[in-house]
Length: 486
Image 1: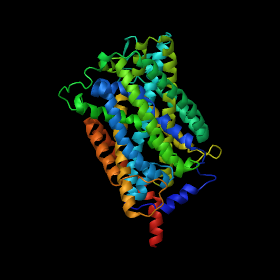
Image 2: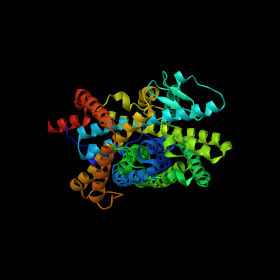
Image 3: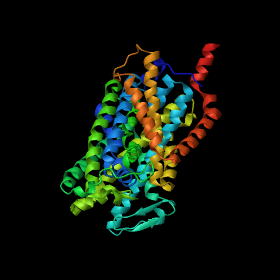
Image 4: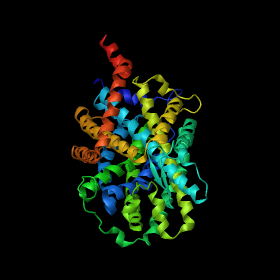
């Protein structure tokens, strides 16, 4: 359970090329765009309104800053690992090298929550914005086919949709982008670059045009008084809001999953991780400030498309459709990167023998793990079609925070065991930075609803059962150690 992969073995895997291996095709610009592509999405355009209405009020801007601080600590740790071990798999690979196979399995299974359910979360919000856009032109998708059975949706004109059968638009976008990913990483990156330019432009336009229409009365009280429950307003509500919007920052983690496809990972990975984090934090705080200034935070309750609701207050009705189209494009890039990240984690776990060889099968022409893409196309579609967006968002946040905690621990472990190993990027002020990363992430996990913890434990119990039934028996590292012992 505690066998580790050596740095030498990981670097050998990173240098492998040719048939059956991933192709190095991503530049530093592609990596930054990959991070921004994953970061600016549902967390900004959807969960911001939910966190303001239910947790922090206008002080959701402080929630974003708190979440960014946690990400900064974790991001510095990620950057060291990503430059040191430029292999696909993200936190899973780092844990395998520092804390052993069982911990690596736990984190790999946890990353399913982060990426697969992250893609599902964004696809549900994508569906909401699509419904809003079509509704304005009197094009109605039957609500039974556009809303999950346990969800209530309110459209911009006040129309209430109480539950349905399945969310087909969300399923459609997941399947479409899964097919794009099968075609190739370079092609997917080009598509992502275009979408990133579009959505950053939208965010900047929203901030610029919305700033002059802010109603200062909407900021009072800036920190609403706590109503007696831990997560509802006051300072505790701000911390819960930070845990909720933390989902918005997981994009820099997705950058590390593409390490094996970066042209110059030792330079490009730190730039991609930290660069995307800095850019998006600034945009997030400004965006949230304008949004809660345009509309009273209470009006965002149950609204999965708060950006469109807020922008309607500016009077620029002729830009409303363009805003929604651009947000749909932005969401598309998030789903694309999340699906890509998950497939790379499962690819790496399969290469290690912990999952069936099916998941590491590389397409002979496109050099992508296409069978894994097919699997997650159906897996993510199930959640996208039937689970409410708020439940998905909480599950993704707690899974991400757990992954960050293990990466911060891993940096300290690696510094102790391999102090002289080559580190193109070094996390500053160790052990202060990783310890602070652990403290802040654990605090944010504590701030999440109890239901999120229950779901996490159930999910982890299922993963542990699969490990002992299959992974432990087929581990390649275990087989290699046994051969060396003989």
